[in-house]
Amino acid sequence: MPIPVYSRLSTMMRHRVSVASRTLAAILGGYALTSALTMLLLAALMPMPETMARVSALKPGFLIYLLILLWVFHARSATRAWAWLAAWTGVASALCWAVLKGGWS
Image 1 (cartoon, rainbow, N blue to C red):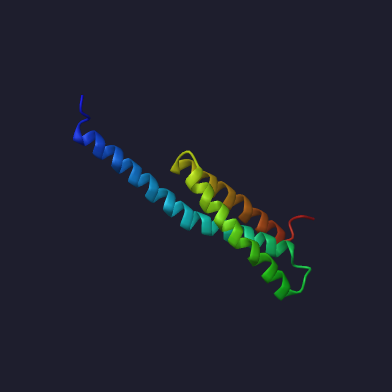
Image 2: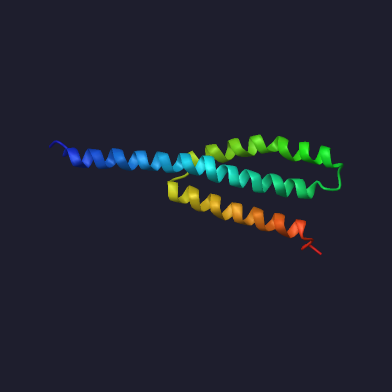
């Protein structure tokens, strides 16, 4: 029994929307999470000289971004990838804010 054309189109369209959503999640969400993690690492390295701390915090950022990009496309769904990125970006941002405001002591 042949599959109706509208069924195939909706399946193709759902796949395209999922890929587009994952691409946006990887680019925008990955950038936001990488930035938050880099700032957190920079805040942790503050006792070092400023230039050395910046370079030391930025270098792992490229690897972190690559790993986030790979994970977003490995996630079971685009919704799960977005939720994971939003949650971890919020956690990293809150930790960074706490460290910079002196909230640990």
